[in-house]
Image (cartoon, rainbow, N blue to C red; front, side):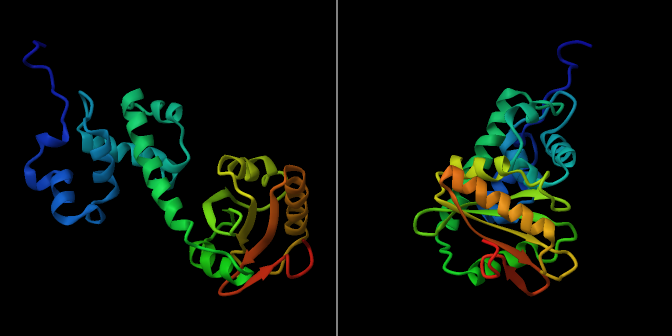
Amino acid sequence: MSVKEQPQRMMVRDYPSEERPRERMIKEGASRLNNQELLAILLRTGTKNESVFALASRILNDLGNIRRLNEISVQELMSIKGIGEAKAVQIQAGVELGRRVAQRQAALKTIRSPHDVADYLIEKIALEQQEIFYCLYLNTKNEVVYEKPVFVGSLNASIVHPREVYKEAVKWSACSIIVAHNHPSGDPTPSQEDIRVTQRLVESGNILGIECLDHLIIGDGQYLSLKEKGYI
């Protein structure tokens, strides 16, 4: 194949103007773009065999869930075919900017009671079909500075490891944490394993000087605070 016959990498600008996500974003706003289009803007170019839109679509399919972008490392991104160091860094930079904006918004949420936590999380995790262990990281004013679903699946002490819970607390200089998880059955009654996990997290937090303030179990339109029940 001659040089002239070699396929060219498709860039965002190579598409008709009405199809270009950047032009649509300017005219209609970022909220009008789908995940594929937003990722295509970050990628800028495709590969010699894939357009930038095809590459963006494949990345999203490989990840399985858009939330994975919030957790994946540069090295893991580079393991995806078509993603080199530059593209991996571009993606992570975009995700990190979004995360920092979200953190600033989250910091406006002040936790004053277990009801505040339940009200904040019930729409996020109450109706999930799997158990999701969620952590809120608070500053000295009990404002949420960071939040993260740390584990997905049946709750037990071997899976919910204090190391994974508290490493984000250290990273974000949190003074305390509140943890919560849902019961897909809708019944927030704590199991013995729920109590053991709570006690383990409280003990670890005492060692680190980062207090575990509460553990909430979220059911279907109801919740239970292990702090209020005397387990903390």
